[in-house]
Amino acid sequence: MNGLWQGNLATRLRIGSGLILFAYAFFHFINIGLGLVSPTWMDAFQDSRQWITRSAIGSVVLYAAFGIHAILAFVKLAGRRTLRMPVWEAVQIILGLMIPALLITHIVHTRAAHEILNVDDQMGYIMVLIHGTWSGLKQSLLLLIVWVHGCAGLHFWLRPLPWWHRWQPALIGCAVLVPAFALAGFLVEGRRLVAAFADEDTQLDMMDNYNWPGPSEFAFLVKTTEWALTVFGAVILLVVGYYLLRKTLARRRAVSVHYIDGPAITAPKGLTLLEMSRANGVPHTALCGGKGRCTTCRVVVEEGLDLLHPPSEAEAKSLAAVGAGPKTRLACQIKPTDPTTVFRVFQDGRKRRAHATQGEEKELAVLFLDMRGFTARTTGQLPYDVVFLLNRFFDAVVPAVTRNNGTIDKYMGDGFLAVFETADAHSSAQAALRATMGIAKALASFNVQLNAEGQPPVAIGIGVHLGDVVLGEIGAAGHAPRTLIGDTVNTASRLEAITKEHSAQVFLSQPLLKAAGIDMPASAMIELDLRGVADVLLALKVENAETLDTQLSDFGTLKPA
Image (cartoon, rainbow, N blue to C red; front, side):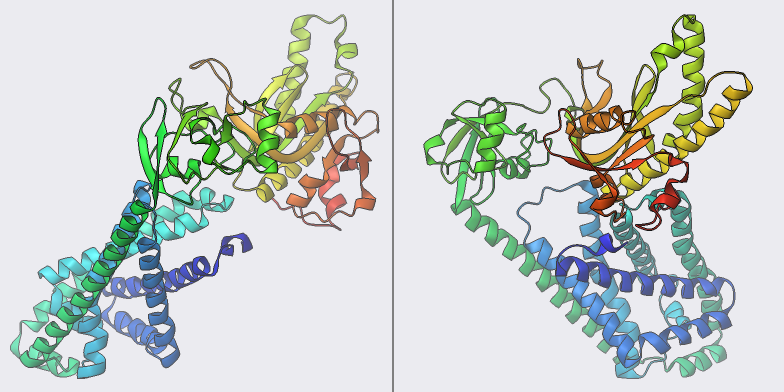
């Protein structure tokens, strides 16, 4: 949960203020919905809410949250380098801008009317005032916009958490019920109050109870609303003006880039070539996300090479690793300041493949399992018997992988490679550890069955490691299964290969344990010099993983799925 609060101060303030406003909206909508149940309950709930929100501290917190959230949104919008964005982000911004435009009228006729004109702005007052009017429709729209905007913000904040995805269908159902409940309460109670207000004697009593504003007071509220909307409109114009001014100045300081077999663009100086491509919608492959590791963003600089800054040590090393020519540079590392002409070595869509099919780099846990002594065990057996044994074995142990968000990447004879593709490295490592323990328990049960049949038990070796892997479709277009490659896979395979040598069932690498939150001291692990692995690797030897949670309990917690 702590990871959700990572980011700069502005990000944390945006999340914190958003949560305060979301909580306020939630209880406000529940308050309106209570009109469907009981007017007494509705009024009592409002009194309880306002005891908090209209106290000195509550008012400061609420309006500070609103101000901070709005200011941060305007600053972020004004500071954007481009208006190109995903559809969901554009919708979120548009809804966010609509909220103050619709909310100002509501605030003026409730809180401002209460503070300035001493109006008793109970729910009944506002319901009688706007029920069945154009204002009522606008405030109903405001309710829906606020709720959708808040739920969307909550979703994009919490979506990295595995439990959020599990509970998402139920939460969506609850989210739909809240505005439906509020609108039903508004319609039912509003209809009752408007009918009562139509009676002259009752109307006088209600106006007296609410301290109903007179014509001149309503005129004052209307003027106040118009003034506030004018100020809001001026702020919008200032934001737009600032953005356009920045764009104009940026064009004067822009650099032109021409892509061979592609468009010609202009972009602000100071960006990397990869950032320029993305900002202008130019397809540019970068499997590692622009970290300078994969070299798939490399370009051949046809013009302007001599005006570029020399490659850094890391860039030069990456280029040397792929035998790149003297005119080749990494788009994620160079920052053109003069007109440049480049050729993209790898272009998205060259074979009509989506970016995700070309490859995606992630930090994940991988598990390599192999059955020991398989060749000796099956020598002389009929192929049907061999296939039958393998399928029984896989039926027994693979569910432990899939139950823990794992996927079998490939079967290799009497073993398999599994990957745990979760939201982050921590959850991936935890899932791999749970799966390892589950496999060991399933194997023990499987061996009990074999013993009852008079067959020898099955022994296995497992290597589990965590690191960067590339997932993508490997093969001819249209006939390419999704798989993973990288040094992490090789390391997991090497860990499995030495389990027999060390009389271990499992080897767990230090990076895996660290990512899972298992603070295992180096003295408890073994230094391994694995073939094909550049550096010495620390790993934990596990002779029997059935009780892995207990074995790790002194150093961290193996969380349940």
